[in-house]
Length: 172
Image (cartoon, rainbow, N blue to C red; front, side):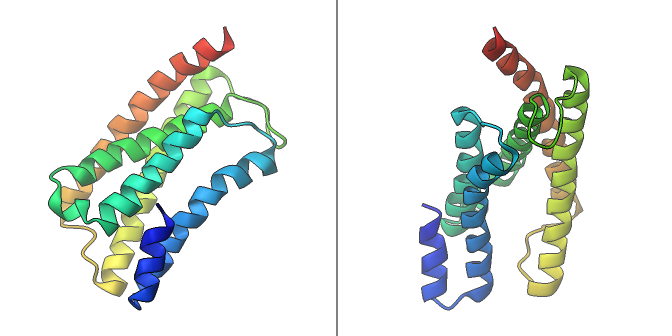
């Protein structure tokens, strides 16, 4: 599903969109590359969450234009994206890898929450830069940006709460 928008935009000569869609394809591959490099198995539920977010954002959000036609699609994706990123970080920080020792539960929750929200801030900065350079209108004003960040906070908060229960159940 991630290849269709890339190939279509390439065939239509939309270079900037093609690059963006290609980055989503690479992000999908990164999930397995990450697991291999750090020698840490990721549960299928986590891989599926990451891939689902890519598909919802790239294929449905941009390619099928859900961001323009479905009310609150953007907010739902900010919530879900931050949830997914925080859930990912919580999982990887609670387990030893080739490069680090696991963190305590409380520290993993805090760091995961902060990293997911930092990713959200970086995303908003990227939207701002895209708006200035390519005039894509990704940010629709201050209210849009602030609500995006608020939904990021809620998504990441719920992820660390649910992630804790999820990992606790897997350990027992």
